[in-house]
Length: 353
Ligand code: SAH
Ligand code: SF4
Image 1: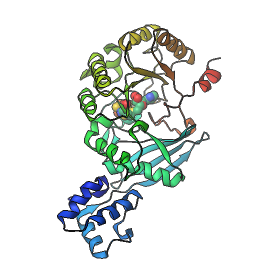
Image 2: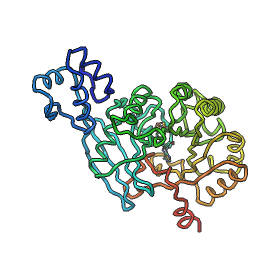
Image 3: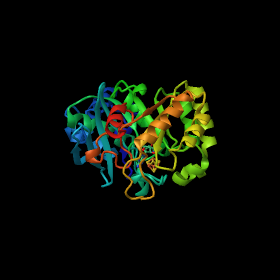
Image 4: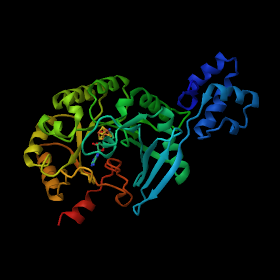
């Protein structure tokens, strides 16, 4: 397809294109405003003359997303299954919490990284999402649920740093005043640890929160569950994180999914404390989500999780146990979950007895 995805372009890029076509500057703003309103058909852009709409149709396209399925959980979480223009499927999860709405969005259809506990990884890689397709998940969910989203988590399907350029473009678009205007401080990006891209991201000096899926305190365990550890090991990753913090001044969140008898022992907690000691960071302990496709992995008991947490705390590490939202609608889909919602109590009261 030679047509350009106009929805992935910034206002300034559209202005430049239009200037090259000798079209007046204000047209760019008009078109951009339609795009921000999630209009995905040039003929619906009513204030654009027909002749110019025809030119737009020849040069550009607007990739659209369709809601293929929607499930609503008893806790209010909504999971959307979106169909992309070429038939690929992705998921997003909309969550309500005390301070507003958060959405967990996808950055790729599938994933190449092959983490053994992850449903997305298991199903392989289809393609990168365009910046516009990442953005559109937010717009459609807002429209559909008739709400305003205040926080974004790039923690859905795919590895955001493996789709680096489009994700950066998305971040610039979504935080721009002419667009959804959601500030970087309200955005989290989760990575399995693409070290070269962590260095690259630190150069952007974004104020977003970087989440790093660590899941193990040493190479022996991490090699068993995350293929990426063969390329960049725990020490490479921690060094990159330290440099990221030094460069951006931002705290890193380490995600640590607790897997029974694999990474949940007191010895692992001590090892983890040692490697994170003195870092500006926070650890999120997450119960393993249903992993029925991989029977060798089970969930850690709540008791184990609290013991683990206590050890980290004693060693001076900030730590929270996260709960999974939307369980009854499989909102997790291997990974889509509200781990950033602080809800220890459900776990403490419900499971720890
Ligand atoms: N690719 C990125 C972001 C998407 S995955 C990353 O790996 O960070 C989002 C999070 O879900 C990651 O922390 C991932 O390790 C976690 N995850 C995947 N499958 C899971 C499962 N079965 N149980 C708990 N967490 C899981
Ligand atoms: Fe990909 Fe993240 Fe799943 Fe690993 S956990 S396979 S990086 S989506």
